[in-house]
Every structure is written in structure tokens, then in C-alpha cells.
Image (cartoon, rainbow, N blue to C red):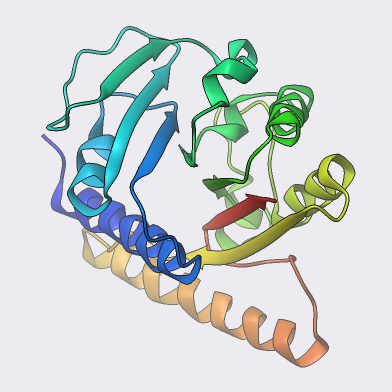
Length: 222
């Protein structure tokens, strides 16, 4: 059973995706591919808000869930095993906290496959930000993370793969709501620090340096 704070946390990302898709001015049904779908918690929310022509969920483990749409399929496959044919009809790719679990080489290889597609594809991702105030304090000591993907690293990788043939937008994702008094104090403290650093960022015109505990990125492969 998901907690209420998790559902609020999830809905904030859903709202962020919807807002940025509207900015892309896409007015048709989407063929969606979700990387690292897990138990389908994101997929079940996506189909409520997006006009899905088809939805393909991908994960390295066996998953057992269904979606209330006609064209749903599940692939037991890793990011490394994705072929160009898997991307041939895809319009949008979602990856929620996925890329920190793969190597830089595998991430670059995946971007290379996007570059080879003969169509525009939008990749939405969410990654922990090691350069955020909380990230600097905790160092994200998660043994399942193979690497860290800061906004600067995402930009440099995209630039090396796509050259000028891409558009990258990066924006902060809010912290989950606190569940206790002490977490509430930490929530206020972290947001205060993030605000101060963001203000310094704006004053000195720094880009892709720090943000909140997670960041959302959108890569439009032209």
C-alpha cells in the first residue's frame, strides 16, 4: 500500500510531465515507452492523463500488472538490450529514477540509439541530484546507484551525442511532503537552502549546478 506522501510525490512529477508536454504543443495520441516500469505505479497514472495510442512497459524483472488501454505490452528487457526496432514507433520515453542504475557507457549507448532513430523522440527522466543541498549532505549512499547524473553531466552527454540536434530542458522536482515534525523541519531547512542557492544561481547566471533533491530533464531529439 502506497503512502499518501508517496502519492503526492508521484503526482507532482505527473503534473510536471503534463505541463512540459503541453509546452511541446503535441496534439495527437502518443506511443509511450516506459523504462524501468517496476510494478506499474507510474504507468497506471500516465494512462489517466495522456492520450496513449500504445504503451510499452520495460523492466529487467518479471512484472504482473495491466493497463486499461487496448495496446499495452510488457518487455522483460534491460536498457542495454533495447534495439532500434523497439524505438521505431515511440514518441515519448519515460524514465523515473532509472539512469542512475546504469553505467555512463550504457546511458551514452542509449542516447546513441535515440540519435539513430529517423524521427523526433522526447525523453523525460527523473534523477537524484548529487549537487543539491540534500545531495551534498547525504552523498546519495544508495548501493544500487552505479553513477550520479547531475544536470551538467546530462547536458555534456547530450551535447557529445546529438551535437546541436537536440533541445534540453532541466527543471527542479519538489521534495516529498514531510511525514513527521522532524522531517517537516528538515523539509523547511532544505527548501530554504535550495531557495538561497537558487537565488545565488540567478544572480551569477550559473546553469545546471544545483537544484532540489531530484531534477527532471526533457531531451527532445530533433
